Image 1 (tube, protein in one colour):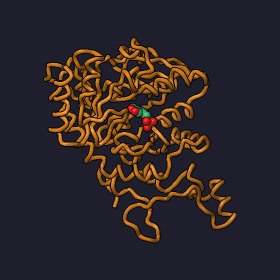
Image 2: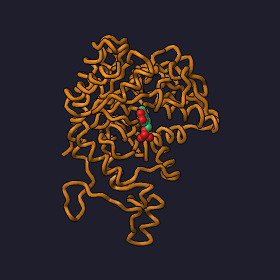
Image 3: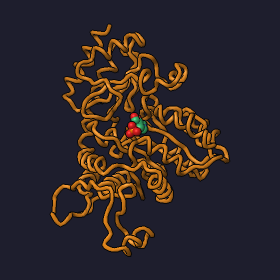
Image 4: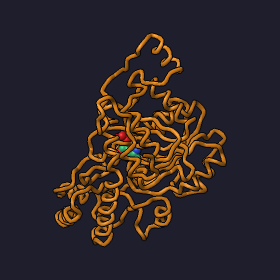
Length: 391
Ligand SMILES: Cc1ncc(COP(=O)(O)O)c(C=O)c1O
């Protein structure tokens, strides 16, 4: 049965049954696949026949995961990667060459920033960073060498929102590749293709797994670009393992229902923090007082599962607060069933100088919550007691 509904596609997109007629997809844990004859091997290698050869190239579990992701993101094509960072690096390495230029938002994940600032210059690829919401700066930064626009929305960790229609139009006008890391929103909340994105990147490690077990990534989008990324991965080796693909594809079956609850719990934690006297500033895409509220509402189905806040008392208070938490895990991941509290200044963005951190809105007292699926009363009670006990 073919359906256009997200939940049905996430559950019913499946590899064809084997002769055992299994209900759930089995795990194809094999490095390579056999040929019935020398001729078949030759035909598979020279592209005259379709089929699996070697799991660095393709595998039924990986295919199932990619097919689902393409349906959910409504893209023409896709390829899976070993991690989210492999997806980010592959996109740049496969689509750009020496002399090319990237315009990116300042508000991006620390390691993506590191690739732009410290790795790509070695290959002659330059970049300009702009404020995510400064339209004039985006326009001015485009040069004849610019090939790609890169953005995260909502961004890690301060949950800034990019105007996706504006970036879609800008990239079309200059014949650029508009690439977005959609990890925080997931395809359930936001489908960037609708706004003109050419490449959508995911760290599947986050909400797509959703249970903090495996690493994975995906590059989805226009076939002409994905083909280049596929070839780069097939030859250089950042392929997704069949086991991780199997876990991730099973996880996609519950993405919609999990995201609904993550978002409901995040909204409740936001309401609690927004009225708390020890919270100086709140970061949440659906914060009604934020100038980004209308844009976030236009682009996202719900507010997402992350909430950030700046606690009064700077780093010392922030440290006491983290140590006082009893339910929340202190870990660098996000998008898990378990609620997580992170201090970006000393972890994910610690390689940046204090001035660079402040430029990104990461103050010493900034805490990022990945709101989990525990009972909301327990989540709020934990944050409330930690605020009280860290005074
Ligand atoms: C927005 C974003 N993109 C990419 C990544 C990297 O993903 P991975 O850890 O799967 O390599 C992360 C990890 O935190 C992230 O938050």
